[in-house]
Image 1 (cartoon, rainbow, N blue to C red):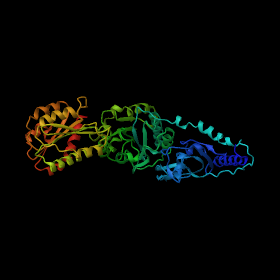
Image 2 (tube, one colour):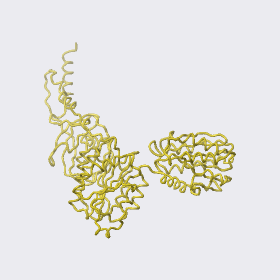
Image 3 (cartoon, rainbow, N blue to C red):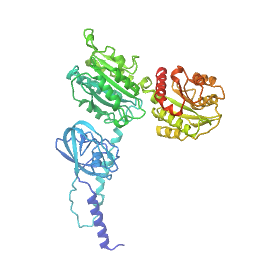
Image 4 (spheres, rainbow, N blue to C red):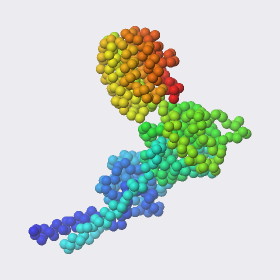
Length: 554
């Protein structure tokens, strides 16, 4: 047994510890995902809340020092440094809305930029309420943590979070018509239409993501694809968009969205289909052709919803009567949608949602840059030499550099040949561009004879599957001399299998052999240079030839 004095000291320390660690009795327990908007505070009112421990650093936080009310309170507290990972009480004060919430990285939390929001909050340290210490040795004060544990166990915020429609994992950027032509009343009807559409899409972290840009005199980004991934937040954000007025410069808005709003830096997701839903009241003021071409070449599926199409009397005022055909991904009826009036628009939402989520019909998702299987057949014969062989590898790496290489996009493989053949790496071996470029540049030079025909058979069999989609397999053959075997029959067999061949010859390579190997049209698939140093001039035309052939076949 310890002496009574030691027992008294131990009990006093335990009581003191529990008092110092206990939160303010008036603190409201919240979860890691609880937002400032969920606290129902009046303007300039503050409240002490109790954050749990170990909140994840990847929570939605918008702003720096002053945070948009849609932000996670505990996430903002971590970002500001008011709390640590152990959680605890923090004072939340409601502030007016503002423009331009600035993003920053602080205390392990990355906050995001938000153009505007209707209300804000700030954070401060919570003052601990002083409690009297009793000189009695009773241990009844030790269970003081029980009131904290019980409410924490009841917090199940994650269970009610919407995960989204996993069968419709799109990145959808909506272009609102904010022109003078639509007017404020129809602009609000248009927003209601988009709200209803967003509800039908069932947005969520693993479902569709929606961003919004307003078309008027100059395009205005309202919010990005990853700003709001919960339905409640997204619908509120759409309703808060204010009317701009001005011209209907839809082309500028399409170009703005296609150039910058689908990038990973702006919230786009790698490997997810890109959709640009363009809403036009009447007709656009500017040209859509060039902007839409750029969108299609970027793998963006442009849908155009035309509301209140021009009447026969109005047609002479329309600059381009075929603007719908030029704007959409493909003029096949799937990507264009006509609605007589905004007053009847909501009854078309279900049909439009089904079209957007019809993944197999999103034809523009697949481009030459992100959908091909690209094989390189490399002459490693003695006549090439070490230094020229390295020039060849750099040349092929620069071709590969033009494509979006990943496990869900373009794939690259390589075969080297002399009399023998060696599979350097297959199409499935590397899943990102840097790995492929490194593998190409580190290929070891074989040296030997030249049997190009046998090499074509080997590459066709080892690189390309007979089940591959036709029009997506490309083989670039590079050789510097005469083959000791026949090239024509193996090339024809490869063509019949659906492999498009591009023949690149250097030095003593016979042009007749190159043309026998090349796919039709021969002139655009055959390249010849006297010197290895001239190979780099062919790169733009080789990439164009691949894309031209891909687009014709797909």
